[in-house]
Length: 148
Image (tube, rainbow, N blue to C red; front, side):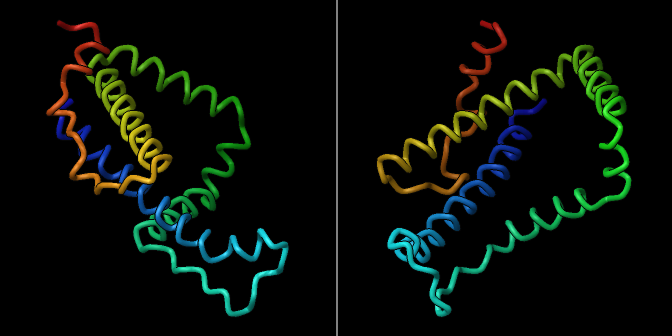
């Protein structure tokens, strides 16, 4: 896998997560005061509109969820188990896929940790493109894969 592929995936997922976080925080500022006072939401309460990227992502998830094929597939646990076994066996035989998953998951975890720390200390959330790239920090990847 190329480091830029991991960076692109990380930026995409991180960007969606950041938009979701911003949306949740802005929505909570609107509805929390009434909820904390145990009052029903006023008719005039205006929750901000969902950002288009989140709307698109949720729309795609809904398409998958409402798929008759997926519904029939998930009703057969033996098929799900067989698919999981096939994916696992395939990944076991492909070191490049293992490396990509390792790099992507560790980079996403780093981003999520950074976001949580920034949130807890009320620091500004930087756009994904301004955060460290995996190409800038290959040392952690080498350590994870046991390379020198």
